[in-house]
Amino acid sequence: MSKIEFKNLDIESLERLQPFFDMTDYDACDYCFATMFMWRDTYKTKYHIEDDFAIVFGEYEGEIFSVLPLAAKENVKKAIDFAMDYFEEIESKVFLRGINKDIVDYVHNIYGDKFEYIEERDLFDYIYDAESLRTLAGRKNQKKRNHINYFLKEYEGRYESRLLDSDDFDDCMKLVKKWAIKKEDSDVEVDDGETIAIKKIFDNYDKLKDRVKVFGIYIDNELQAFSIGERLKQNMALIHIEKANPDIRGLYPYINQKFLVEEFSDVEFVNREEDLGIEGLRKAKLSYHPIKFAEKYTVREK
Image (cartoon, rainbow, N blue to C red; front, side, top):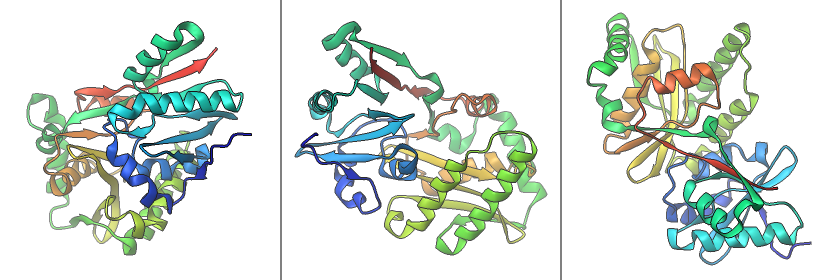
């Protein structure tokens, strides 16, 4: 039995963990409190705090794993060593998820072929030049501009875009339900976990609203699109969720652009998360021309 005490990640963990999230300089979407909180039930997320870092563990398909530690750059390797010692203490094979290339190289230099090192392309985050998404300038974005111009003309005087608050969240959940029904009708698998994750944000918005923003578009007084985002770090916005009525041409590119223009006008980069290997989602994310990826790797003890 380990002497290291882990706590379940809940909304009350925000105050304890945020200083450690603020120490990090990771580009990946996994490393902010809202992301971990949204998916905590899926991964049974727990954490442990030391003086100068925090480590986070979870479960995936019955196996215990750890992610990158929440630490300043100079303490990351020390924290990884701490996690490695914990795996040994509980007599579990080392399993690291969402690891960046720097840590892959560090672990490989110490342990060599004792581990498998797996590139997880389906989990790579798409990172974009923010000004490109705000302006959609250039020939490469012509189709996006055409769709937006169609939307603006077709719905002129009928739409309103604004930040949403708790009074609007019932409308958001109705839209999620409608979107899920459309997906079911098209024989596309619907992720119930995402609906639960969205509801977690809404149910705890009073604690999260200093960081997390919810932006929506009403047409004829009915919510037709909303997006949830925040600053991952000072120069990068992170878009957690984006939902829109797919039958309204131009609505998706419009909310994508408008949210950034109105609420993240000064960021340099935008992280729009991974595609999970879903063909349609990959095509959509590539169509916005990412400038780089936040690469993620799995490290497993053989």
